[in-house]
Image (cartoon, rainbow, N blue to C red):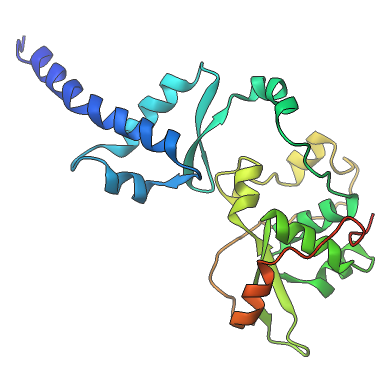
Length: 231
């Protein structure tokens, strides 16, 4: 029997404890989710970040706040079963119209997509105010311009979309079978109906050109009002 094993384990625990405390402090103090590269850079050299995150997540699993991963980043979030208790202390969010929800879903699954393509999929004209609302919420972003007549702007989801809906990646969106199970679409859909595999790769596609700087700046300016959005 190796009598030195307990001593080595105690030494490892002594080294790990300060790194775990530092990791916990960084995540609590952060005003936004932190990626693993940022966390690793601030930890002591040689710290096993995956192991520390797993230990911290397990420690907080039964508590009022949980350590979760969303958009490839880490953050503390209120435990799901306690969210309703805190809802009254938060400002009432503006509820999205059906048009906005449909537009958001189309962008999430079909990105990159232009306004005209959104209208074609929905079968109705899209009010510009709807896109503005989603831009202001930080759930979508302007990607680039399509290499087609008129060079229309293409849209895709933003990191805020993943964070708000608690998704680690866009691939975590439900597929057609899951959508049927939740009742979001009719279980008796046509046999040929498919749901695209979502992809939010930031790289521009071959048929996209970069946005001009002035267009990017304008995208950051709140423009929509409740009267602008279609119902």
